[in-house]
Image (cartoon, chains in turn blue, yellow):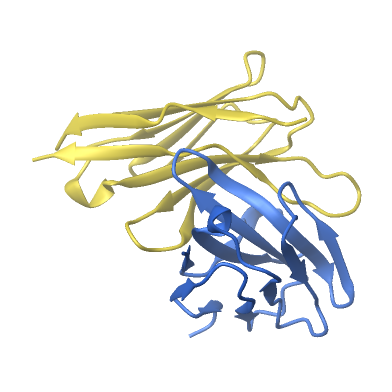
Amino acid sequence: NAGVTQTPKFQVLKTGQSMTLQCAQDMNHEYMSWYRQDPGMGLRLIHYSVGAGITDQGEVPNGYNVSRSTTEDFPLRLLSAAPSQTSVYFCASRKKIGRLSGAFFGQGTRLTVV
Amino acid sequence: GEDVEQSLFLSVREGDSSVINCTYTDSSSTYLYWYKQEPGAGLQLLTYIFSNMDMKQDQRLTVLLNKKDKHLSLRIADTQTGDSAIYFCAEGAYDGGSYIPTFGRGTSLIVHP
């Protein structure tokens, strides 16, 4: 089925470990973004991309890296995991033109850093 | 910067109407959205409204926009237990380049049988 696919769904890391959260979309969307969701905080933008080869920082970028080598994929890298990065992470994509469709979201990755 | 405010909780009885409220601060907002997040799932777009509209109705959903007060509401008629979820208000403005909406904290809707 078309949509946004995130992997893994769950992950436990030790402090200081690194890992990559994967996000892929098959809708040929130009825009992709990563959010983290914390209780009572809503969704906060980490990084976003407006097209292959172009990325930019969002509201809470520290401790995370992204790259966009293809239109389909937008991985989020945690360089050295910290307990403060325990959260649920959502990847989203949308077309550049046609804001009426809103954004498509993945199912989320629940990350715990111990 | 932009800020979107929502109350955190709302509890209603099945069959009643639910009204979820949202306020935003960016007067240049051109699109306003309501997303629904069911437990353990991602967000799904419920409905949207242009900033030049006052009201939009879509089956059981009615969106009201008061541009003067920067107030947005989502009314769910005949609320069902399946409507229990977190509802996010989001707003955005086109700046000629990227367009990333700003989300509120979400309102948890609890529907009692």
